[in-house]
Length: 365
Image (cartoon, rainbow, N blue to C red):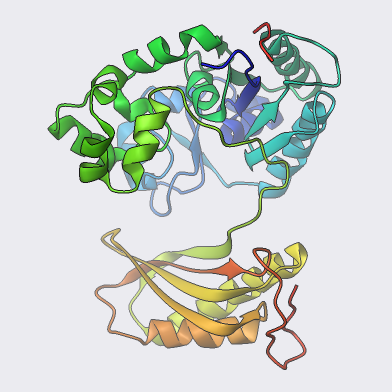
């Protein structure tokens, strides 16, 4: 490796949504808690550590969560509150560096190679940030510190909750070799299973495979896997990450079988989507309808327009066209509309003539 390395910190809040709820309501402290869903409908958005001991986690159904943990308490998400807390945490980050790349409300990368405190140790900066988050906000955070975003993100999960791990420059390759490939950020369940079938269980196993072998089995991702297991990941911390898509969705109290009833729901979803687009001052060309059936199978249908839109009426018309594009396979529990191919990627003069359309060094660790 080069003698000059970047100092990257990945900060990840511990069970953020659930921890905010427990902080705001002391009666919930120490109890198994799920944010989102219910014991009859919906999907869990987040789970407290007390609930995770029972196997409750995000993205499982409320029914399944309740079976795993009969004493589970469900609370409705309060995203305005989570955003408010997230802004306070981000202000703390900005006291140390302007190179802050938020990934979501509860995690971010910080490049502290050169920082506002003049502190040469990224490890000490991470400790100080976590201490301030606890004292000023009341929540715990975990952190990973290393030479690039990829290793820092893996490291932040290592001593959760309320811990941190530093992977020094000369430790990176050995650290990655010992890891199960499913721990590699970006290796999902399907890819991990494929790797297992090929006899690739750890970073060490992955490192033994030549580039040609990985490209043969994993296509364009082969080069990525070849590089990351060697600690090569040059992506910079980008403070102004571009939004790639904007969406809104609704889970229904009862499954819907009639497209007529679904049209009403699509109108409210399109209104919410218009609000989010106009707040961000962006428009998009590609509209996608998401359909989740009562058996939890997912289907998406998309249409790309020749112009940028952010108007609820146009979005609704396209969504209805997509709804009737083919027969529904089953009754429906969730509908969502998202828009991507946004005009924050490149400026263009192509617009639709309607009033609502808007275009627009070696160091100490």
